[in-house]
Image 1 (cartoon, rainbow over the protein chains, first blue to last red):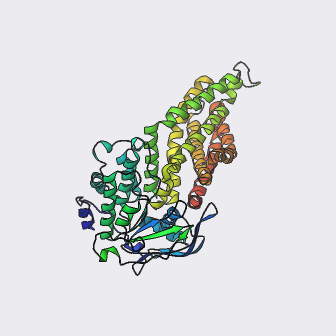
Image 2 (cartoon, one colour):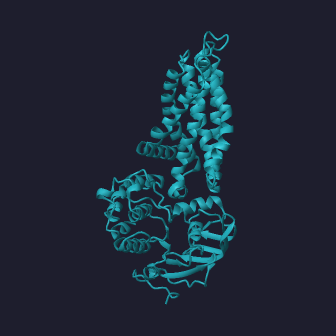
Length: 262
Length: 230
């Protein structure tokens, strides 16, 4: 994983240990859902979802508001239980509560909410979440530098940040964590052009060094440039059967446009 | 587990030092309640057969604990609103922190903040209600055990209501009846520390401690399920 940090143009200082014992999957299928139903306040936000995600893919989830994209990300992060059907993430069963807790440690979820404490500074927030995730604090400064959070922003309270700066701080926590699966809900939201390009670089580099990414975005052009595959959701399920491509790590690191969007 | 609990407690205390909600808003509220009680109850009436003790002096322990119980509601609600806001509770779940650690950490931070609040409010109550302390050891033990008890029960019930859309109104409804025995025992114990010389206060203090450990056990066992439900 040294090269991951070099690819981020971050000097290698400390890298959190990998939890290989948590990876039960024997092949490159990292997420598999079969006829999965997930409820939000008794409403089937996912209604018979069938989906597969393979190692090294960058999948763009698209669809109208309320299609179930965010619910799918929460489900794959282990935050939501499956009401019926079945689902596996990195070989862990989504219907089993103990497995779902294990899944949470292996995935990183960038949700609509910032997951930051408004009263704490940018640095204090990242430090807290690194401690909570058992990540070495030595990675904090390089990551903050890379995400443009050092300097005067470092000790600024999160409540004083712009939405783009909050997004960068939330992303910094995920970069520090280095999860196996990145689940990003509207990662470009609130970011300027430089920030959006940074997201693309972070995602591409993470995938090049073993991660798998699934993200939602209403910026179709940018998303399709980044993604190796696009799947469309409607009414809590896939609109059409997804085509599974070769994982990006076995191809060029250059982003590949999906067949469906072509 | 202890490491994570201390991490959560330190974070909550750091946020309080930064925001000063407890010191700047809850503490003045407690003091205001005490003063209003003092204004509502005449200090001229003397309790029959009580060595010239005024009614206000006699009911001071109960009024003190009542103001503390009311204030604790704010402290507990505030503690959980930190996690509710910005999806932080989900982020704690994603970090794989043991729910028992979250329970202990939040309860520990509330205990420390409430202990500080009680010392300040208690000092003012002694002045307003003209109370004198007969047994400082029983009083200190009562403060410690009751604070522990209130924090544990409060954190447990905040976990119960965490997933509810009406948690702000539901928490007092569930918690205040639970606090009734704590209020009763803490008042009796404080009365013993202020008025009685025969050490009967220790019995009440031990009872409070047993209750506190009961709530701690219940919280540690059930908080995982409560977090999953929320």
